[in-house]
Image (cartoon, rainbow, N blue to C red; front, side, top):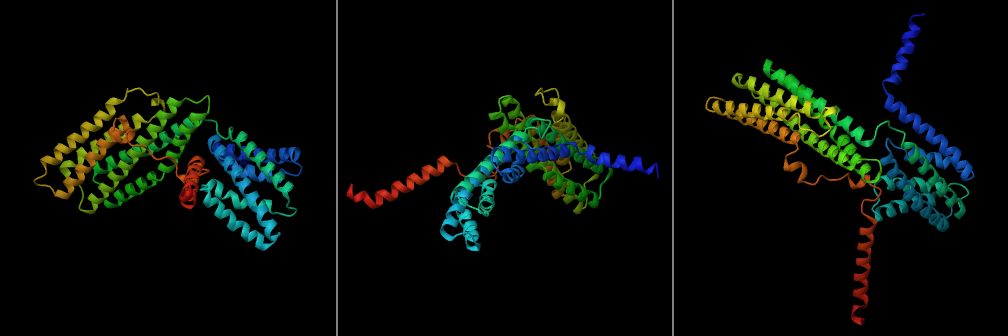
Length: 402
């Protein structure tokens, strides 16, 4: 019984010790909510509840996201409070006012092209404001509490992570690249040993899971670049470099999945010819080494000391292409085509790692989805469109009199 207790305590300790980032975030969130409650009551009589709710909704895993979320809360609160006051003034407090408020909030959010961040806040805030004792002063009181909660969330979110957005992006790139390199190495060993369809299916499944890391990788790279543009201590050049590396890794991961699919299709069609197994294995191994050497965290300094790794991958791919062409007369044509497609995949991986492909820098990478922003369409653009519509209508009505 005595020996069991240390094991239990050790297990419980490791449950939290192995999740330091998560523990840090929930502790910061708890402190932020408690502080918002206290400050909300001190600065705005009985405003602690609303401040704590808004703070809990606004605080995110980073300062960049919390600023956007807090701004969305403020916009949503202002609109929701206005709509709630108007609905109650017209219909009095009751189920009709609640229903009309939700409908009006949805219409207003749609008309202003609010993203998910703010559009969800509009009806939620309106329902909070529409509570008992609603009046103009109460709405302003709760609006003030919202401002307090959002501000505290932004302040505390600075401490949610021990690393900067660039540091987190580097960690994420290193993690995803490590998975991609390991998968290519696994496929290389399997091809050399003569893999089965079940093994190829396992590789393809892992490649699909790897693709699911791309949205988080892109989001973190976008955050690193956006943070560097407005935070004074951030290095813009470093953030841009990390952003390009994130795009390069995204292209690389897509090629890895394509290679896994090609190997699976080859297994379904009868397997790879023995004459090319070794060269395919060598090419995949070279690509694996190129990825691991290029995306290691210590290599983010921007030097070209590992340029030879990508050249080795290109040479291995060229050797594979020559072997496939030599066997073209005797081998199955579909297998030749699949083999040459892998050569092209390896070439694209090498170009992405060297960042010399026009696909990386000449093609503008889309920003985050519009629905994730506070406003899907810029207020300036909305104002310009509205003014044009008004001027056109004015000309149609009064043009003949002018």
